[in-house]
Length: 162
Image (tube, rainbow, N blue to C red; front, side, top):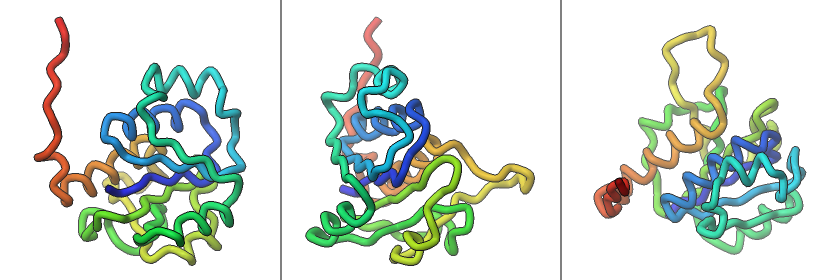
């Protein structure tokens, strides 16, 4: 199962929306501090709704702490950036990948991008648009990885209650 890693996220609703996506897919979510908000922030909770108990949440006090944690496991660090070298749709994802996203204002810092196995971008048609919203980017990347790994075929289909 891939992991989603948010490095220095700043906007609570984005993190809450990503947490909700991770809860729905059973994907571990890693938050690397410093964060631009408190974990108890009401906007964060509101965006994640009542799904927080279903999130496999890991908090890391800084980049070094996260990196030490990640190095005790397997998997490639995949940095998503508008300056990535390869389109995510042409990339072959693996079961133990770490999908990494930077802050909404700065993206992943250059020193972190240098430590990544690969840097990926999400292609966009309009050249005047700098980037997608962080929560959209994380969902797009996670669902492509899950599609390639066969998770979508294994997922149960829930029907809305009427």
